[in-house]
Image 1: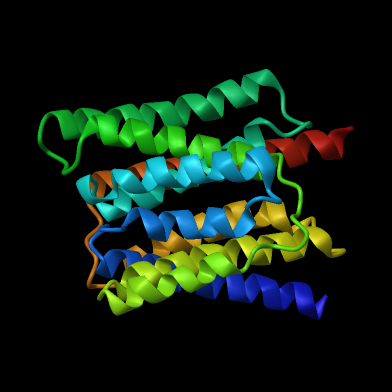
Image 2: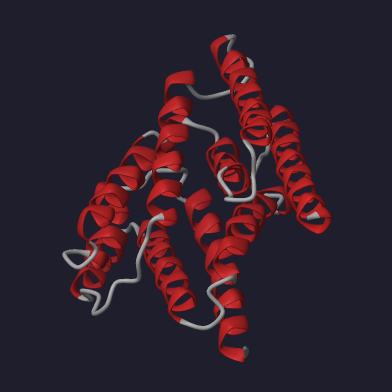
Amino acid sequence: MLYAALLVVVSIVLTVVGVSALGHSQGELPALALAIPALWLLPQGGIRAWLLLLGLGAYGIVLPDQPLALSISIFMMLPVFAVSFSPKSGWQLAALLISVVLAMDVGLMALQGEGKLPGHASSTIIQILAVTLIWYVGRSWRPVEGNTWWPLFLVVPLWVGGLEHAALVALCVTGLIAAMQEMMKSKMREWVPRMAWILPAVGFATLVLTPYFEVPSPVLVAWLLVLGGALLGEFLLEEAEEEV
């Protein structure tokens, strides 16, 4: 129990540090920084590791074109997916929650198209698809035994090249994957689905509470509505389970 709680705390700290480092890097992440977490899982990770690499790469390649708050807010789709595709959920609830997410995303992309919100609608679509792929990989993930540790040494050229924030992001993402794997291997694997709620919320809250970062009002409103929809869906599932 203590070990699982420690993994949760470590995951939260890594999320805060990683988001802060990403903000200070202005979203400028070299491909190497995004490849390190996935390479750490290869070759034992198989096709899932390659899909994770694809998702991280697609997400990161458009980071410089997007407001950081918008990019981080998209990860709030993870708890929505978790509720929508839960074995206890029906298609009506899934349709409702996904409709809320799509409505918010379309609204943000419309603002981008009108020039009222920085970034590009096409970049938002890419990040939505990337996060969806990351969720799919996480849902079907099986812990990897004997991870390949040599890719972690690739942070050295990043650090030496003056890309300290990119190196820190790569280490934080790798650390998060490692923590999630340890949770799945332990008796507290039921904590893992909860992390899909906690970490996206913590990451976005880091931006909101840090004066250095700017969070556009439309992004904040959209994030709150998506969060509210996910919480409502979770409440409805619990109510239905109690009635059975």
